[in-house]
Image (cartoon, rainbow, N blue to C red; front, side, top):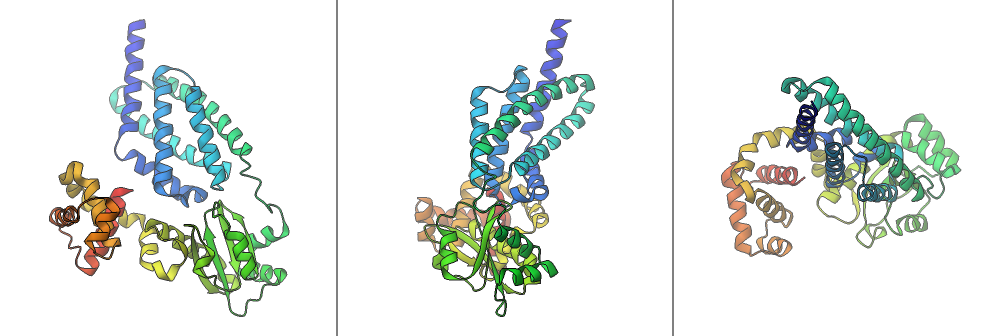
Length: 373
């Protein structure tokens, strides 16, 4: 009987490892997190994927060994809590992202268990073990996040922050908020969005124009009465900008500024970047459905490239971002210029996309970006 129980448990562990190891699980989880947890959506996809992958691996090891989290795993959790706090992500959003991942994993596990002949009782036992592990992880995560002071931004609860939030809602509430703050709106208002660790950005903005600045939903957000210069964001800092607009339009303008930030980061641009300067990239980043179609269409090409898929994607992307110049792309990748040429040609051969054509270049860049993220 004991031997049968051991074998049965091995089948449950195999099931969980199979679920976690599925190629489409992590992209699906990351997509779900970005869709459902707004404060997490502003983070780079690689950041979300890396932490999610590490947590899934740790949870799988714990369930397999029928144990709680080790001190090493809890140390990683502490680092995650501190990182999210420094990024300005509220603890509720961090826990929400973990919940989305958990729901996806166990939903997939139930489906496979039913078709694999694994009893619901065994799966329930595994889920109870996971819940015990997860509870300890959550407790350490909350403790680390709070210790880092994530919920104590300077000015939190101040009148200015309250007015700023009302401005960002748009509509009549924003019009009244602008009047209450005494902001001159004759020339329209601008919204700037940056990561919360943008060193020196807030003081620079305050020095140059009347502004309301604060941390909102994990980002440094400013409503300005005139457009800042690109030099406001120095030292490699990136900020997205949109405007000018009437106060009642600031809700939409804020979303455009965030789109500008995301688009600028995807191409490693720094400084203050207006959404009009990255309009195509911002539109691309907002269409996850088209990304899925693009990836599906060119899945055979990715398979055909095999181990060279990532180097080829990196070369094509670097070449396009260098204005189709081979030498700067090669320098960026630390390879010979001929290597870049060969990889671009290989990409064209397997995908059928002509990267020298204007629209082909756009599709090539978008596809390579999707492959790499």
